[in-house]
Amino acid sequence: MSRYALIAAVVVADAALLWLDGTQGQTLAAYAAAVALTMAAMNRLPFAAFLAALALAALTGGSLALLVCTGFQAGHRISARRDVVTTACALSAYVCVLLLAVRRPPGGEEPWISLARVVILTALPLLAGRYMAEQREHLRRERALIAEQERLRERLRIAHDMHDSLGHLLSLVSVQAAALEVGPLPPDQQRAVGGLADTARAAAAELHEVVNALRNNDAPGLDDIGGLVARSRAAGAAVTIETSGETVPLTDPKASHAAYRVVQEGLTNAVKHASGAPITVSVDWQPDALLISVANPMPRRPPSSAGGGSGLHGLTERVAAGGGLLHVHPGPREFRLVAMLPLVPVIAGAIP
Picture 1 (cartoon, rainbow, N blue to C red):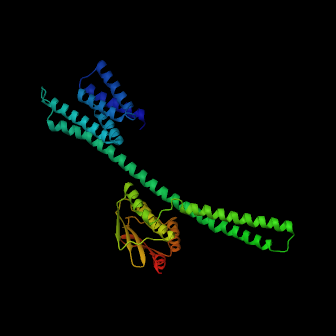
Picture 2 (cartoon, rainbow, N blue to C red):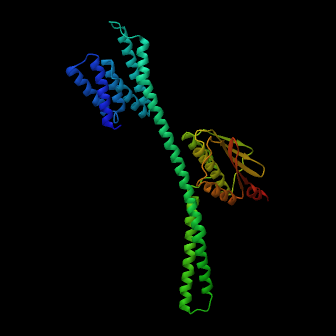
Picture 3 (tube, rainbow, N blue to C red):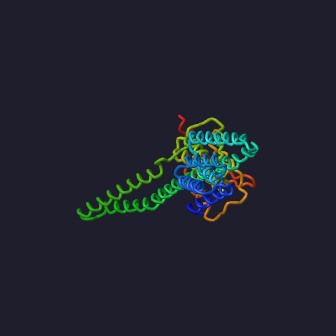
């Protein structure tokens, strides 16, 4: 339903109720105009429109459709404590007016009928609007978190591709130029080949710098797992982190980064395939290894395998680059992602 159709429907519905109650002429026309203006201002000034709807309802005893629409919109736009206080004060004033109207002769409504009207026509639309707003914000944060993780994963993939393809070709060019440089060539050609070799080496060095920047720029490590869990909680995920054993610093940046990626991939999979389920992140320090696991209950519907596995395949390579192993345990009741990262570099560095 379009905006104008909604305004027309509310005006017709509330004006018809007031007409059936005996109101006619200019009073009915003024009331219809007030309802239309309130509905028109509902999107830009939701709380002012809600207050106006409460005032019209208190004066006329009607405005039922107007109360529902403006209440839902106000609940959808509540974002600060001031909004909550304003809405609560307005509802309290409306309840007081209704209760006072009950006591006025001749024979008003029963008090419980007035309170039921408040709950049905104001409180429920407010709560429904607030719930819808929270769900929309939860989905927005969840999508932003997944998009950020996909962006980092794509950046690392590009870095790997550049290193494997361009780096290999530039190395070949540099080797071939060096071979020509020591060969029996005229002096001018030797100088040209020497310049070519220098250019190839400089290009390879710049390529390595670019690849390192792509890999290490904002490259999080083991110490950033807490922030990752906090962001997931802020996005609405029920994440619990458990730590055991004596903490030992990971001096190998590849292993530290792999630990972060294991937790990130586990949280991403849990959010995608088992949204709303509790997630447990475990960091267990063993004497010679760090065990990291991310576990969540299996979803009722198994995840589709179409196009899947690329993230876990890349993660396996990343963990292997840090000297570790990655295991996926899709049990009947629980999905668990486990990585083992050795502490051999730390122990070897500690030996005199």
